[in-house]
Image 1 (cartoon, rainbow, N blue to C red):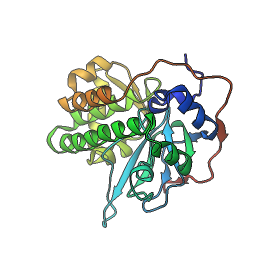
Image 2 (tube, helix red, strand yellow):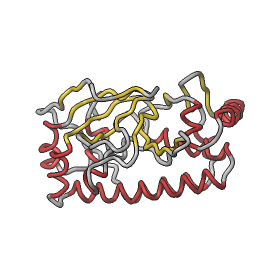
Image 3 (cartoon, rainbow, N blue to C red):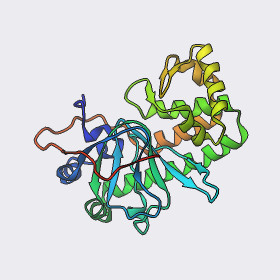
Length: 258
């Protein structure tokens, strides 16, 4: 069993060999990641990478007219800040907390050195990148070709898979941005799901009541994306070694969304 808060609640960190994990553990900082806060601004240099555990984050792409689009979500299966490992270390898009929770962060230099050693971390990150590309592409297809109820079920199920319980902290406005639709459309679709007993929602909170009902209503896009993550990322069953505790950190580098 995992402790209440553990870096190994993140699937990438949990899949590392014992020696590799022990090297990184002293540098991992626990961080609270509240709903609606920004961990990266577009164009900013990446000083830390983030491993969500109970939170979910989303890259935010903006166009000149002020419209923003979120085409993927990142939860306990992955990490945010990939361009510091695979690119030039500058964020091509902002990243905002989509569902509040916790996570761990680590300095870019430390993780880059581990990545460049060509060990297990590099393999896991590359596999995760492949799965993330699949998610981004499939989400774009789904948002274009499937109805709002199917899109909402897909998004909620994907979010649920990345959450510790059955409750999600997010607003209809945030979901609308994620799906590229009007907030009123999300509200209507959520009302239908609540009417059939699949979910229960109040402002800023959505509780999944009947997962099977949602799975019956979702389109094939959910299965395509889910199967890719399951194929590429392991589900290790290991406990957190007790001798070394991760640092606790209260962020002063997170900006609130206005």
